[in-house]
Picture 1 (tube, rainbow, N blue to C red):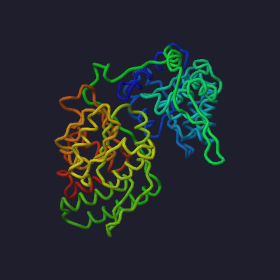
Picture 2 (picture 1 turned 90 degrees about the vertical axis):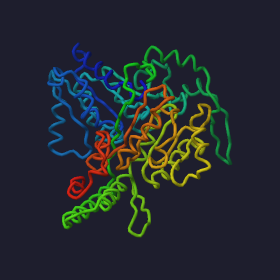
Picture 3 (picture 1 turned 60 degrees about the vertical axis):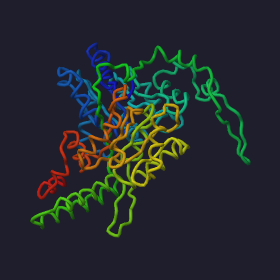
Picture 4 (picture 1 turned 90 degrees about the horizontal axis):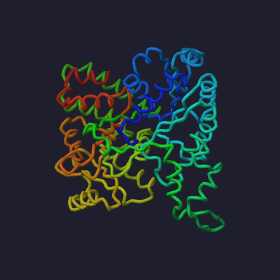
Length: 453
């Protein structure tokens, strides 16, 4: 089901039905880091019926187990009539500890094993894919959720459907599956010889195999969806980010505490510098840009794997735009799939970028800009997915940039995805903008201090 069409609700409804029938008493949910917390915080409280929720034990995986967490995890291994839910991030299946607890949970219960954003297991050679598939034999039911099961080639389907049941594709080996559906030629570079995929075949046969085991919904077919669909993807700070963030926050709080008045300009400048850190860089007092290791870029690339069609990406900092452009070009091996539209973009090139993006036949797929330059007066209705890599403090810029895709000429629902870091200023910015609060007018004096606490 395409992003924003409610696949999580459908899965939870399915789980509730099977639980009521007595055929499952637990669910093991595996999702990427940016998604798995929303299952606990939003999806189950919203969609699981109250009469089941009252008898549900839900535990989130934590790699650093405290004694309290270990005791909590023991409660979902017990034989009871309650619905037990264990939510883990995909990366945990690359660790012995994660595998151990997942196996124990599966052996203790009649479990539905769920992979959310299942393209995370598309690589059959990856350690986590092999571990997940091995453990899947212990589950009573299995489900995969994704908006785009094929991100690069039809071969992406193999491990996703092998997880469900090897008999669906009827191949016990990835290489035999590849031989059936890919056209290859042998190439030699120096002393190295390898097989190169030059095309695909028998795709109608493959499609027929999948048809009775899959359910496909596009946004354009969902007439009851709102015109604007809002989603969040959560990232965590790296250790380096956390250290710099804490230092800057403490210095800023000290500055606010020692000053009777703080001008709007100074307050916003202070908050902006802290926001830079969250986004993966900081500009020093000498004007030099220092890059900081961050999980944000990796999460953006994961989202793009789930998207189909053209995408708008908004980033409020120049350094972020440069990093994103480079990462997308490296990922897709093609500079023509992305164009940047910000202050450094020559005026004479800007309309051509818009024309190319609006042309459905043009290879330009990603429009990357900042809200100050690209957020006003242009039409980008070729996209129905808009990603905010980072936001500004300006409500008007948020509203205007949203409307580049949501205007006359748009025939589809538009999905807006905010990448954000929990328990930081980042989270407060997204919340304020979604509630139509103009942060720039709020951040004055003591209110600026409140944004840091």
